[in-house]
Amino acid sequence: MAVIRFILGRLILLFNFIFSPKSVQRDSDSQQKLDQTTDSFSLYQLNACPFCVKVRRAMKRQGLNIKLVDIKQDDNLQHLIESGGKRTVPCLRIDNQDGSSQWMYESSAIIKYLDDVAAKAA
Image 1 (cartoon, rainbow, N blue to C red):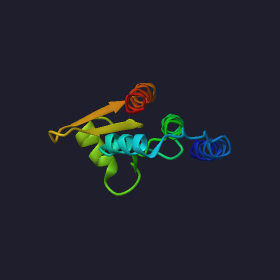
Image 2 (cartoon, rainbow, N blue to C red; image 1 turned 120 degrees about the vertical axis):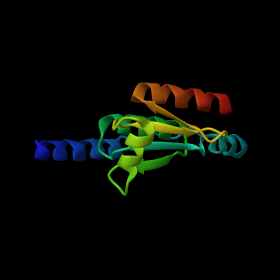
Image 3 (cartoon, helix red, strand yellow; image 1 turned 60 degrees about the horizontal axis):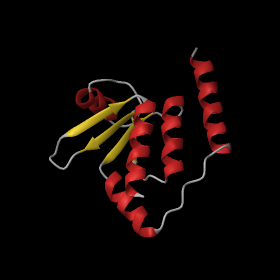
Image 4 (spheres, rainbow, N blue to C red; image 1 turned 60 degrees about the vertical axis):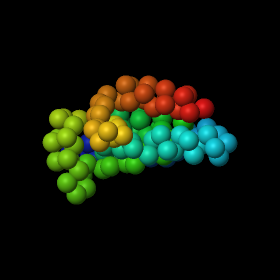
């Protein structure tokens, strides 16, 4: 099973590389405003997870610069479980100005939220 998962993961990454979407082009002021908005966002993810790839492709299409956190490195998995409550990826962490954090799961919900953020900044 591990071999199949490894092969499928590499195929997913290969196809993602080959068919990578193009980023939307914005003027520098709009992009800077969007970057400031998404500066407090972090995407907890795994490189070869198909749902994580789906979210990263949406981020690239919208030209979003969001910090990627690989849960296989350091103690990121433990932080995700303790703070977010689940081990599920992808997970978008949104740090609010009051110091609290919002954790968003489900790739479709994350993409919809990011599309709304990008639309408001445009």
